[in-house]
Image (cartoon, rainbow, N blue to C red; front, side, top):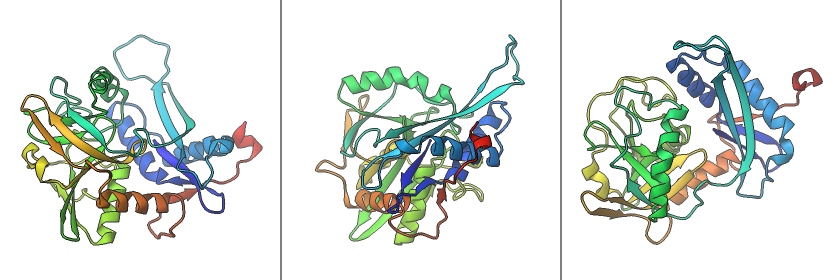
Length: 310
């Protein structure tokens, strides 16, 4: 769930692995799995990348190495209780943007809720993803390559896409406002958080809806949230809508359709908007080490000993 890139010198760097370690720790704790200590997580990531360095794409390509940590219960017993034995493993594979880079139409899912209001939508667990595959496949067969979820309470607020976070951009002249939802039912996206920080560095206005007590800018932290986030009725007022995630990267959304109302809101009809281009370039330049940054987002892999790799 985090990428590794080669910098201009060919060195391999992983993007924000400590934030991903924190998110995995939160996910584990939520479902009664002992959290993976950060040092073990980082050692595992380093080992997996070093042992598969030949699969890290060259710097001058638009590809990266996708790193997927996984934790699962491995006890040999039959009981309705938390286990005592778990496996932590990491697999990697080269990849390009999951959906490509061209704007794609999205469909709002109205017959399926991704997460309950007080459920596990805020963490990375398989139960949030496998059930939506049926609906995503059906939408794709009908020409919609993205699916968007509204809140499950009354379907009046924007939550997130099935595979990535929702970002809305409003443009007024040369000025931009980035709007990001902040709900307990939404997975805290490291890519989205990075976009928020980059937008602030551009001098853009940033609205996190609603702002939570002291945790709005802290990746992967539990949060108590009240108030309205992004009402469905606000969708037509966005100049651009983006989907942000490790696999999706930053994808421009062409349109959003809601069948029950007959609404279709169009955004990137003629290609990615200027806001999307600026965010995408800035993020990729940092990830690939093209632009030197003091943000501390890159973590360089290091050689491993024979004992570590055994």
